[in-house]
Length: 301
Image 1 (cartoon, one colour):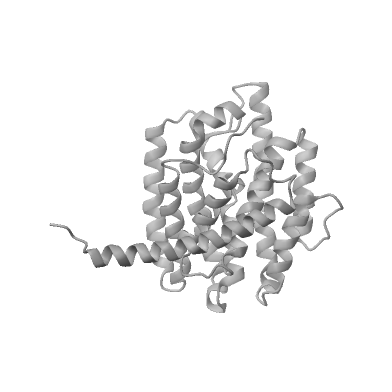
Image 2: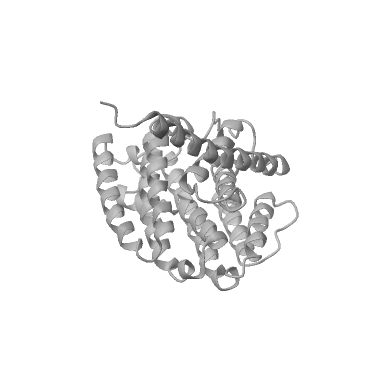
């Protein structure tokens, strides 16, 4: 016997259609951003499918938001894409990578980006839009810390890749690699979104939410690696599967971490119910999405 009626299916599809409207509006905004900064978003690998997928992810992770409320999350996700491209594909030396990181951290601190620094200019736009939110004045150090953590992790991974290129034996351990998951950028996006949308009660619990976000981010790092392994072999990017662990072991690790995060998020429901749901949906959407594809188009380096 069917467990869902025709009426159930109609209502579910209507809600999914509403969420897709949020994604469509977000997609158009991301297209406009990409057109303003063509050096940050070359096509390929940044194409319409990637921009659409980014907008879909934020819409389905936080479907209770309006398109305007998702704007910062969308743009922060796009900025992470640009930063990742600049570090992995444009920077040619450790000095150039550290220069990118230092310039962006300075912008997060409030500095004016240098002329010609498109990555810094885009980050400054996000910063200035957040600054219009009253809570940002007190919370900017936390947001700046997320930028710092992400870029510091990017520099370390660049060093690991450079060492591996010189000697295949020069690899981090699996634990070291996963502890560096801030380079994935999800926690930066999450904190940016919460600062843009959360109420004062939620903002008072940002440290706990950020700690939970960092645990969720490790799951996202691993499911991304499972999806992108073949491409990473071609581009020289690091991947958990290159570190002496196989797919079965990583799947077990993901399962254990999901169970741990489920308990952690249930504890957070009492004080931050919507944000706990956000993180749970982030795990669910991302694990489902990466079963079939990832965000990047064809990448040539």
